[in-house]
Amino acid sequence: MPDQNGDKTQDPTPHRRQEARKQGQVAKSQDLASAVLLIAGLMILMTMGGGIIDFLGRYSQKQLGGAAWLQADSGFACFIWNETVQSLAKCLLPVFGILFIVAVIVNLSQVGFLFLPDKLAPDISRINPLKGFKRIFSMPGVMRLTFGLFKILIVATVALFSLYNQRETLIGLSALGLMEIAVFLIDVLFWTALKVGIALLILAILDFAFQRWKHEQDMKMTQQEVREEMKNLEGDPQVRARRRQVQRQLALNQLSKSVPKADVVVTNPTQLAIAIQYDPETMAAPIVLAKGAGTIAQRIRRMALEHGIPIVEKKPLAQALYREVDVNHPIPRDKYAAVAEILAYVYQLKGKKAPNIGRRAAA
Image (cartoon, rainbow, N blue to C red):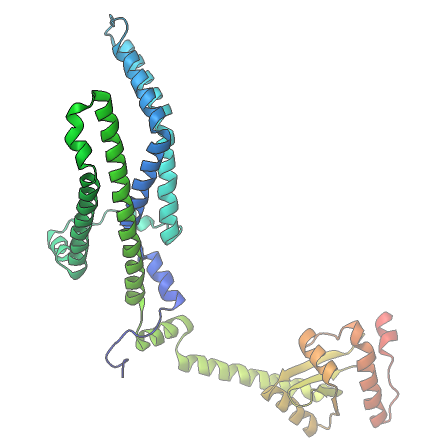
């Protein structure tokens, strides 16, 4: 049998997933975030790069041109430093802010919000050389190394083909002016980097799919593990069975005390049973002494027969009382008429005068 061999054939339980998530065991691809950030950075440079270059050019011209600085004290140096930082912040902070938002969105889309303060604590085992060698030369380490070499091969191939398509222009660069050469190189580098980013994004998506599959395989459980988890969460099956038996016995003991006091038992006819009592001298309305379904209903019927308590079959009333009224609670006002009709029948059998439930409750 698979369970005897310890094969993990069972899907992970919600508790297993929750515990693994608390320990940081989630399916995640770091390459996906890197590829998306690379493409996002290139898109930002495409839309905002011209403005950034113009600003940096004007600022450099301002700082390097004009009259010579004749002051060299610390106050003047602090002023120049603050001015430089503020100018660069106005130019670069929007770019870094957009990249930060993109990075947060990419990571949240993979694992959701995951706060693990334990991971921030120092771990001496991480700097253990022996464990480091084991991680490097383990099967996951070899797989990561192989995938890294494959990525390098793909990046080199894409870059080579991109540059190969521009070989004729590259050969004739010597005939172009300095500005034309700069514009051409920027254009070639940008589109080459974009193609590399798209290739890395495709590889990252495949890696993320593999990580999700591997995570699901690692999370699978054996039948024994499932049983052990159920035992830990819900208790030993024998203890639970014993607890249910005691609860049933307590319920039956309560029935043996309550049902003999009833005036009538309303049934559905066999699936539901509700024992009703009404004392016109002490009660404003009839109360439900006991109710049950299935085995409990059969027990109530049997006890009613043993004690000579009338049993009346009223399906709608039995269903309504079982659904709406708790044990030892009075029946609702809208059921007075139906219960009064039953009690009138019962009192007629006993040769007594039927009570007026509505008048007593109103008083």
